Amino acid sequence: MQVKKSTITYPAARQTKVKHEVKAEDPLVKLKHEMEYDVEGSDSFDLQPAIEDQWLNRIESFEQQYKDAKRIKVYDFLGRPAFKKVKELNPDEIGAELDRIQSLMDAKKMVLDCSCDYDKATIYRFITEELFEHEIDDVSKEEIVTHFIYEEFHPNHDNDLRKYADELIGILFWKKWDRFDSHCFAVSVGFNGCRYDPSSIGEIIQAFQETHSSFSVSEFEIQKVKFDMVKEHAEVKAHIRYVAHGNEIQTFEGVCVINFVLQWGYWYISGFRLPGFGE
Image 1 (cartoon, one colour):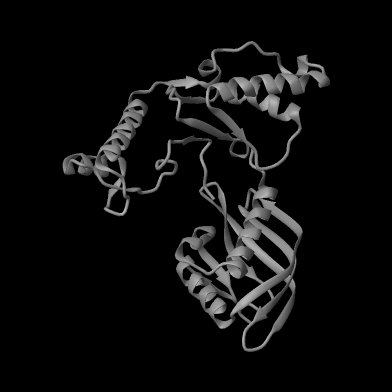
Image 2 (cartoon, one colour):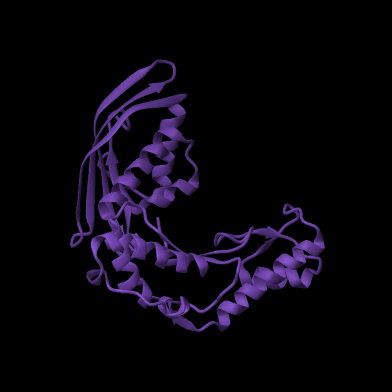
């Protein structure tokens, strides 16, 4: 659930900040990269030694550039292009100007991602009045793409809460539980009148899934989303209908309530109840 205001897309095999299993021809080179760049050595990454060395050297080159890079405004990075403020444009001019600015960004390997749809004036105003002033590392490399996320600057809590509610339903009914799913839960989760940590909630979900052979959800309709930024709490109410298959086929239908708490700037599930689960 956590993202940054700007993220870097690296070349192949370095696209996310996770440990990658690689091997190097020189064990000392491999050890150096494991220690400095969080690259884990293993024989499971089957590349020829010469190619692996080239890849590791490219990583080192990227990392060194970021260490030495100065901070620069996006506007300066783009070459300080001429532009008009949104209030200076006629409504029918905004689309063309937005396309022009985004083309300049594309040429510099910059992308603005939006989770929701916004009118062109809103996006143009954001880019020219806010994003242009945002500072980034002054690194220009053909293989690197910088992504900005609009909602990181202007959070859309209603959209986030709906998305995370859908994510919980997916975890419960559409996939087998694994420990990585616990990322969506708060440090303390309320269930059936008790408090659990994410690991314990995972065990409850796993036991529920093992009791049935499969599930089919015919309806999950969110009816109400409310949040309080002062109290840092939120609630999503929905109507759910699903069938649990096993030794017998059972149909459950009713109100589903999912509670959230704001932790470290992001919404995490702090409690939930739905028909047929834990009853």
